[in-house]
Amino acid sequence: MSNDSRGSSVAPDLFGSEQVITCRDDTTGLRAVIAIDNTTLGPGFGGTRWRPYATPEEAVIEAQRLAAAMTLKHACADLPYGGAKSVILADSPAPLRGEERRAALLAFGEFVARTNGAYIPGVDMGTTPEDMRIIETRGGRAFCDEVDPGPYTARGVYAAMRAGVRHALGRDMAGVRVVVQGTGHVGANLARLAATDGAVLSVADIDADRAQALAEELGATVVDPHEAPYADTDVFAPCAVARVLTTANADRIRARVVAGAANDTLDSPEAGEALRAAGVTVVPDFVANAGGVIQVHAGVVGWDADTLASALERIGERVEEILTEAEHRGVTPDQAARDRAAQRLAAARKEH
Ligand code: NAD
Image (cartoon, rainbow, N blue to C red; front, side, top):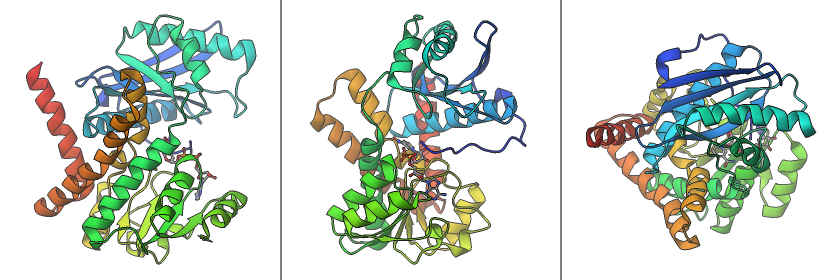
């Protein structure tokens, strides 16, 4: 997955999460952070990211920010999990291998076990299903799914995109111009789905060969990755990096609908407001990109393919509900979705 970390200039909001655990193991040199944002709906589930950080504060901030996004994602997707995330601070970009990796994961597994089920790790940037199985041996729970979530996330994003297009443009996908930024696990599968329905595709990637290969496969055009957000198009699908839409660039967005997989597409509520004022429908990313966690949950509870497929399609219905409500209330779709999550949390707290 792409790096979408925030810079290290901001101080961590230590009481912004239910619990923040910094982990140090002197035998292996492990340094890690577990952020449990909210357990109102269930145990905090969220991946373990393993990469270098410029400072420890940056690692804490990223863990907390991603954990909070998981709370929103699970609440909006009606999943029985809270939000959490962990990061392991790598000494270098080269991943640890062999015994050293195993020892670090076992040490991390001890810290996960100490949360007594409040934190369930899963695969994220820099970790694998095999890593999760090692973590689990220390007695905590981990989600070790072998399945690549990318195609499931893409199916959910596509349901969200169709709903956004129907709502904003009143049409189906045939002939709709779509620019996909990032042709990795999610973006490539999303482009294929849209192409199947007759959308007119353009693709962009900083890996020019990857973009070219997908363009040839789909008969799509290639656009400059840095110009992709400003393309003359109906739909812009950010599937690469975070915070593509900002207050500084909002007036350059020509797409009528934005629907993609990248987390934190908006850099601020103000960017969302500016786009709303300009008539751009921005589908909330944490609603659109829940397909991956829905697929993990399907594996945990043993859903069949049909049940999983309707849960992924339900993302589209949810988007329609959120867009309609946002319009009705005169707020951004992002705000309407956040309020929806807050209501689910409040209702669950009342039940407890
Ligand atoms: P990926 O790493 O497989 O693909 C990302 C692609 O984006 C790569 O091909 C990379 O070269 C390209 N890229 C990086 N910077 C770019 C830029 N500035 N402009 C254009 N292309 C650029 O990642 P993925 O798994 O496809 O995920 C895509 C995004 O969706 C990420 O932001 C990720 O955090 C988010 N996301 C993914 C999932 C999932 O299930 N994989 C779930 C939720 C959210």
